[in-house]
Amino acid sequence: MERKTKIHAEEGKQELMITREFDLPLELLFRAYAEPEIVEQWMESKVLKLENKKHGSYQFEKTDAEGNVVFRANGVIHEFIPNRKITRTFEMENAPFEVQLEFLEFEKLTDDTSKLSIHTIFRTAELRDQLLKLPFAYGINMAHNKLQEIVSKLK
Amino acid sequence: MNLRRDIFQAIADPTRRAILLLVASQSMTAGGIAANFDTARPTVSKHLRILTECELLEQKKNGREIYYHLNPKKMKEIADFIEPFRKMWDERFNKLEAIMKKYKKK
Image (cartoon, rainbow over all chains, first blue to last red):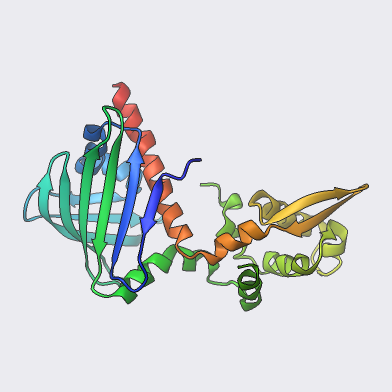
C-alpha cells in the first residue's frame, strides 16, 4: 500500500502536523467529518453529540463487546466552514492528556482528489510526545531491553 | 487490520522476542531454534510463521534445510516510534476513503 499519510513532528515542539491526500472529491472528504453516521463508521466510535457550528460541541465514545466504555473524547467547535476548515478542541476523558487545539484544513487538489491537513497544538512538547508514543507503547509495552539493544546496534 | 502481521503484536510475545534474540547472532533452522525452548515444536513453528509473516524473520534455503535470519530493515521499523502512530492514522484514513467511495457511486 502506498504511504499517503504523513506525520510531521519536529523535535522539542508542542505541535504536530498530519497530512493525507485522498482519492475523493473535496465535498466527500468533508462529509466524512461533518455527518455523524459517517464519522461513526470510520472512527469506529459512537457519536454522542456533534454540533457542527461555532460554539458547538461534540462527544465520541467507544465501547467494548461487553458495553464498557474504553474511550471517550469531547471538544468544542470554534469554527466550521464547510469544505474548508474546522477548528476545534479535543480532549480524551479519564486520560492523562490535556486538551489539544486542532486546525483541520480541507483542500481541493483535482476534481477527484483532495487533501486534509490536521495541525494539532499541545500545551507542552512532552504532552505531544506522550500521545505520539501511545500506539508504540501499546505494541512494545512488554518488549525486552535486550531487543532494544539489538535494534540500536542495527541503526 | 491483520494482527498476525502486525509487527508490534509480534514482539509483544516473550517467546517470539526470545526467538529474535537467538536468531540475531546467527541464522538457525526451525529445529535449532526449537531446541532452545521447552515448548512443543508446533508452538515454536507457529511463532516462526508469525515472525516470518510480519517480515521480522526471513527464510533462506540451504540444501534441504531452511534457515531463519533476522530482517534488519524491519527491525529498524521498531526503533522508529512515530511509525505506529502514522500507521494508526493511515489505517483510519484508508477506512474513511473506502467508506466515502461507496457514497460516490450513489
